[in-house]
Picture (cartoon, rainbow, N blue to C red):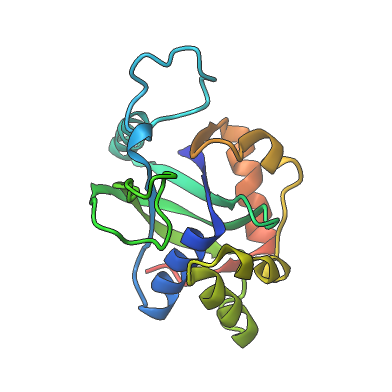
Length: 195
């Protein structure tokens, strides 16, 4: 199994969570900006920083061996800095249509077209509680100032993850680190019914 931390902004994470739970989707949709497509000459980067094409190839190779990929979605920004969920990477797709309230770039032109489906196993907020739903809906509206109260709803904080991984969208983890994160989610977060 290959383990990854995906880092994202609160508004877009809240929107994906709202869509996943409210519309009873079978997978959680997450996306990356076009600039994360491939390494193309950035060999000086940390070897743990992955690009979409690299990750896709690794996960597909692992699936051939009966394993696959596992993602932890880390929310960075608006003073949240928490793990939202963990789940198996079910598939990859590209779609340049607007899905999230905020674009992936400052110009508002990148709609995070490099996307994945995540089969959520562990959710680190109790979405069944009304106040949590309200906080998610406010944050998902696109107004980042409404995301700060969402922080209190998270069940798990992994110390130090924000300092080392929040600046990048895709970071691969060593097997032992991925298994350690997964065990934390198993102990602290809510297991969803897996179809």
